[in-house]
Amino acid sequence: MTRDAKTKLLDSAFSEFAQNGFFGAKTRDIAGKADANISSILYYFGGKKGIYAAALKNIVETVKEKTADADGRYEAVMQSGHAAEAKGLLKEIVRRFLFLLCDESVSKDMKTVFLSEYAHPTDEFGILYEGLIRPFHEKMARLLAQASGGRISLQEGYLYTFPLFSQLFVFSSRKETICRFMAWDGYRDAEKEKLLDYIWKQIDFLVENYK
Image (cartoon, rainbow, N blue to C red; front, side, top):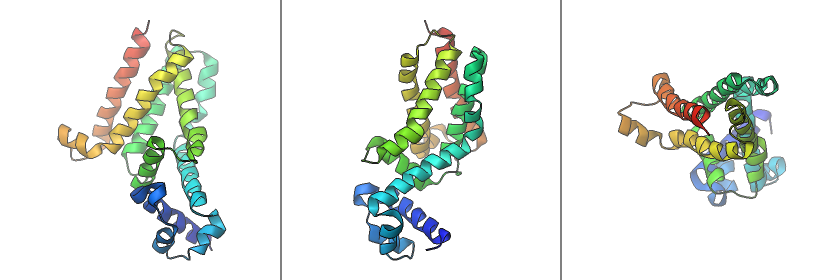
């Protein structure tokens, strides 16, 4: 099987897992959508769990690639000890994730698979947790603590990052409802900036008023 055919198989898996979840997905349907023999899933991925794990790894790699610039500045900001730089990077990472979730640079199927695994973890949850979720929370909590001048502890920072993380996904998963309430045609840059401003105000309030 060529690399293109293997990629097609993985794309088909995203579609099937997004539609039916891990437990409802069938390898014969994944193979059928990719116009491939069902044995190719076993050979290249080791079976249903293997291709699901490959899909989750693909999510982690995609997000890392699209947020690499902001992540690359993290160590330098932490070493500087500057509260303003920490707050600025905190907001930039939030921007990257929000735009990533609310535009079309990541497929709807990929986002659906992530949300499903996040809400109802399978045995493969560790792939997302270690590769994406834990690093995100750690970076955000440490930046929040530094941005507050140490008034927010690391442990407290973790708690504050959970609702922040969830809000980013709510804006994506509840897009149709939000647009109806706000009378928006969709998420163009202006609308995404409004969503971003809402979260940034929460960060500002927390950092400046925490006691």
